[in-house]
Image 1 (tube, one colour):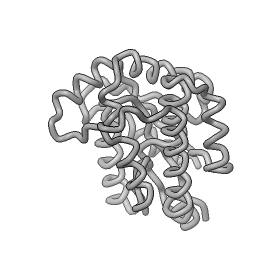
Image 2: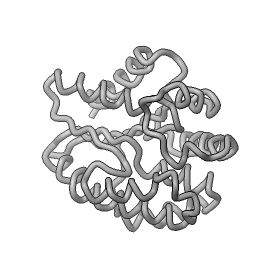
Image 3: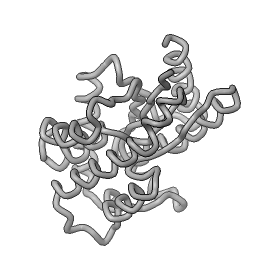
Length: 210
């Protein structure tokens, strides 16, 4: 039996982390076996890599180093947590996956989306998400949300100029157009409750059709 691998993507402040946890809770209440996890992180080794990548003091980190660290964390997380859960028929909801690397390092850092994909192809082999929800919000609004949320983890990417975040947004639109069957857009501008409802409907429709 194989489970479902569903990823949540979007720029900073899109609300995907909050929505993911809410949907995980709802599906669990309905009797599904659900694993909620995140990238980079989700397991001890990957969380340690996360602390290096996102440390606000590491502003000198080279773009290629950053891309390789993300891929390394992704590999360990995949083999240690995601693949075993899928093998046992569970639904894995993951906060970020390969699309984040393509958007942030490939496009916004200027390394090239194809080049970054090749790095990650080695890391993930042929494991791609079954469904990806892209939480669509304009960069300036997302960053304003971050400023207003004192409880949110502040990381190195929050220090980037607005142009960087605009490039991330642009990359996600390119990916949405390139993979329309896998990636589904969610309007992240309304209230959390409304966005959660949109996302929940997409997830349930997908599970029901498989």
